[in-house]
Length: 116
Image 1 (cartoon, rainbow, N blue to C red):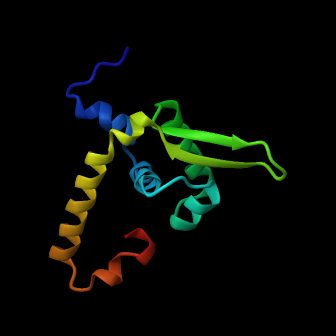
Image 2 (cartoon, rainbow, N blue to C red):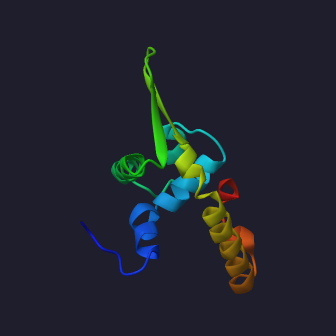
């Protein structure tokens, strides 16, 4: 069993990395299909997106729903447990907003319109 030095290490183990928080912020806005997430995150590779979604699913943060239709499709949404991260994610977004305002003259030059 792994022992954490401080509890924030557990948080970072679950949502750390470049893409997990971005995925979660998009899922807070609603259920998404993998293709939608990929369009919202054009710089992530399909392999990395799939890997990050699987890890979030393993931790019980994200729910994967498969629809047995023709053609079959998959949707991702936050679990009830995943929704418990909303306050943390909102705080991170607010901090990022302040950082951008403090450090950049033109917000539109550094933030993609879909990201808001």
